[in-house]
Length: 206
Image (cartoon, rainbow, N blue to C red; front, side, top):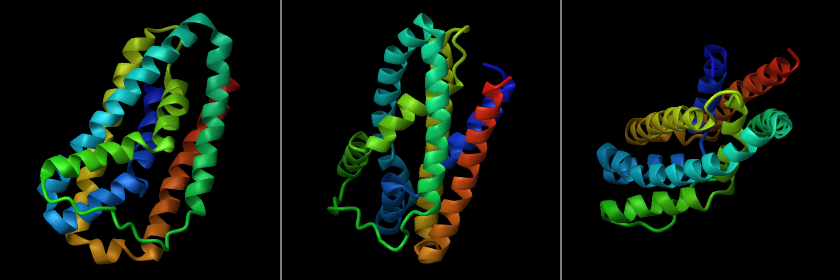
């Protein structure tokens, strides 16, 4: 894994982390109801779910990447197209609906469990770890080690997203809940994802 790969991965990953999906909107809502600290601690449930997904993706796909470079190339192409598809979906996403965050648990364990279940049951999260992370792995290197580095970076950036949405929920909830502001945020994230996708597709031709 080289510096160029990381420079493509970090902004694309951060755009995915910061996109206003179900878990991020849950952090925003929890912060508004229970405070920043509680919302951040509840986010640990989400991170635990993601650790499990990253581990499954790494152990399953590492074997494929070691076995066949053609499989790796196919994953790279599919992953690049997936980034562009995500950008398209985010650009035109409906921002008019408000997230009610389901039930209203009162203690930290229940909030963390809610974060865990929401993340574990999100098919988009599974796609991220099976189609997004592998395209940044070099098959000639140590695949397991690269998955570890990318996974740790993803989790760190996800923690930043959790804290960011918690602060937004506490201080900027009225501003951020406006559909026009959510639409603008979606489109900024879409631009980052599309740029990374194009960059990866162009790099494939070298």
